[in-house]
Amino acid sequence: MTVAVFAEFVLNGLVLGALYVLMALGLSIIFGMLGVINFAHGALFTLGAYAAFQVKDALGFPATLVVSPVLVGVLGMLIEATLLRRLYLQDPLQGLLLTFGLTMILEQGIRMVWGRSPKPFDVPPAFTGSVRSPTPSTGASSCSRWSSSSWRSRCFSRRRRSARSSAPAAAIR
Image (cartoon, rainbow, N blue to C red; front, side):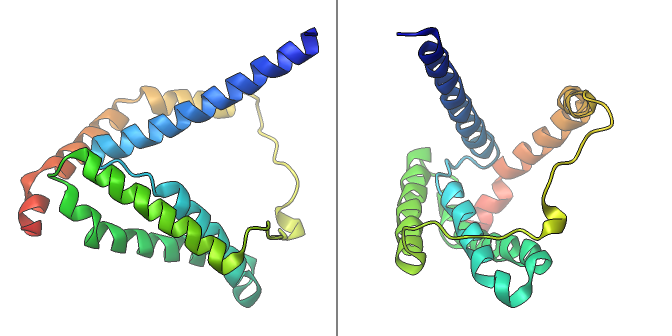
């Protein structure tokens, strides 16, 4: 095995590990706030992309950037109100099974409607290219400021408490 092949294996492993970390963080944040493990968020994201593909020609690109997330957000709220809300006080595996099943249904529905082949999505020329930051450390410093702020911990602890309160559970019964 050459050094180049070994370096490629190492980089592929690091990228795959980073993807696993991102998925685990997303699932743990949702589970920590709502108590439900949501596997359907990726399928909903995909549905939003296909909705944008579908309405792009009728509405134009700027309106598509607004309409498709709103449509998928409304669908997500309907799923939460009709299906997930009943499972807040149940075993977390119930929510995992439900959202995993929703993922399968959404993925197969997308395949039935739009097929398996990739779809072209042309971006207007005004949105192509790259944007340069004034200083290389601007993004890193703002991220570190946000992650170390006490505001973030107060905000998330309030959301966690409100998600775990008995008021939503009482409204379900």
